[in-house]
Length: 60
Image 1 (tube, rainbow, N blue to C red):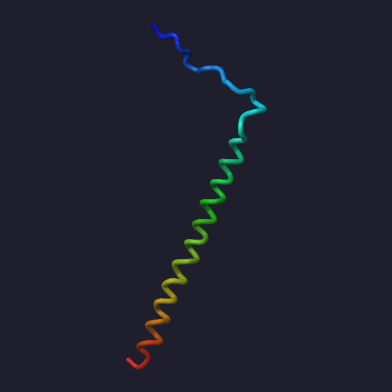
Image 2: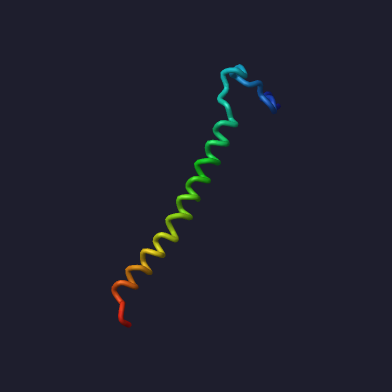
């Protein structure tokens, strides 16, 4: 009834397969750098907004 094996044999030899660790760690580094840039951007935006409010509403 079932002729397809549950775990088929790999079609490519081991030396021709891509390095999965490189893809895993490069994605982690990319996501970490994105979070670092975002964490630097948000306080800068808040400070810029507060500074513009301070300069326009100086004598209130």
